[in-house]
Length: 251
Ligand SMILES: [Zn+2]
Image 1 (cartoon, rainbow, N blue to C red):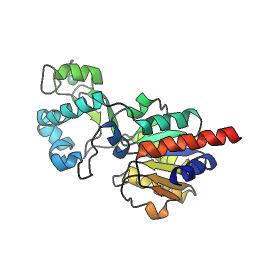
Image 2 (image 1 turned 90 degrees about the vertical axis):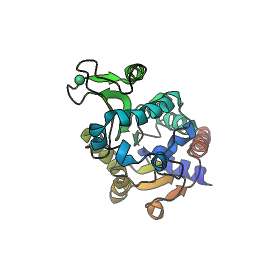
Image 3 (image 1 turned 180 degrees about the vertical axis):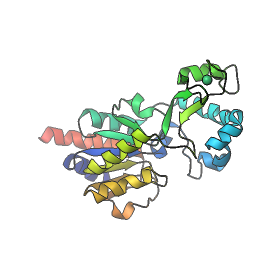
Image 4 (image 1 turned 45 degrees about the horizontal axis):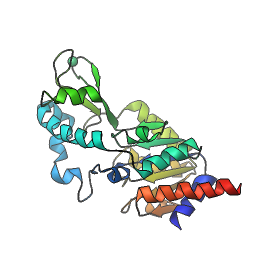
């Protein structure tokens, strides 16, 4: 059985590092980007998600983000986020590297989270460097279509990595270091198409580690993975936690 086998891998191959993508948050009601119902089927990323688009027309980009922020504000961590936080508490997971900007790992209780695409936690002013919180941005959006910098009045930019922007260097370095040191890299809800995340499983494999994948749909690493499970992240990871309970009792 998939989840039992995954529990064995996690137990036997420490440290285990987890890599998550949009697929882990769809069960929280947050649409992903690239699936047939994903955000990019309705919005052209070139018009809404590039730094050039933001510089050209920040109000238009904020119209898109304001809708997303509402969804993100109302979303709650699901069974998969909670299971990963529980596995970290029990010492089975050493870190979570995530492509997601939704803060749901943190809200579920995960502590060692590396956000390689930034997060909606803050927005920054590209002009004067002022940084404001998510709550403040939500408040500013109540009276303006795009939030102005409280210090200089320029329109703020969400601290998420847009296409055409540099990735946060320290986080990327940490993610690669974790992937190289992982005896098991557990991929959850990522189709592994976007760099840098797409390169992380190769780092683990090259260093002698194994890769396990829980994802709806295929990935380029399926044939090289020790285990792939095509299913609901929430169901699979909850079953893994349960299976590891059993190990605890028999020890
Ligand atoms: Zn400013």
